[in-house]
Length: 304
Image (cartoon, rainbow, N blue to C red; front, side, top):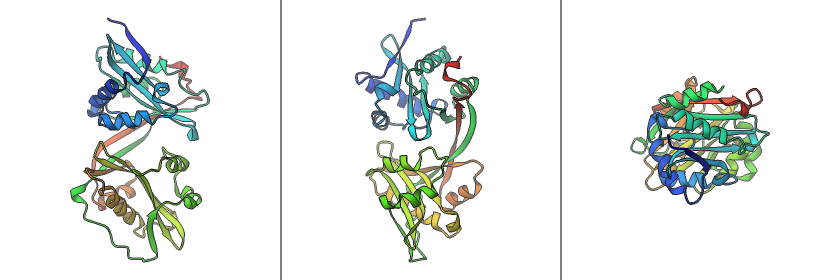
């Protein structure tokens, strides 16, 4: 077998690498969450990594051709990182290449991090087998639900004129953070830092108080929007606030040219949330399984 070399992703290998990732990301048996599907979207996401993709991403190269990729997205707020991959093209020695990439991550991972996470479809049996063998345990499973643009029937009427749906203001932070779950994959501070012209946070206001919010991101190159978080304060639930937020998010998202659908993820056992989305036109597409490894118990040095 020819020697497969592991190196940092570079500007020179970036275009070839994003084409490689895209070709595997579009198949259920090799899909890993957090990255997009198209080359443009994946390239944009890698270039946005902090501190840089050169320091956060590795590639495997066989005779001058990229045959593997693995990167990490770090969350300093949570002392955790998410694994972006691996994506491997060599089926005969998939596990060997994957383990070489994982072991090469050791100097990249900040020493104080306490948790490693990764998510993928159940059809990705290679990832599932490797991560389970190395002390990753299942901690969540979420259904992906889709609302097609053609199925969106228009804005829901606000029956209470005192309820205002508007864009987030910096002065809303303290009330927003009280509603945002502490276990969410982006902290409240991270959500606010991500806001721009395609990542938006809408809030529901009643009596000059924030009682709910919806955070969504537009993936222009992939032609869809994702409603990442939708939450309503406990005392304001069952009053139609969630449906109003969904309706406004959908309306704002489909204004972008080329957007074909909106998707959300909901825990498989959260029947109340699933009913809310299905009442508003969402339909199930697939299920993503999330695994994690507690680095306080299982050190990264223990990979086999």
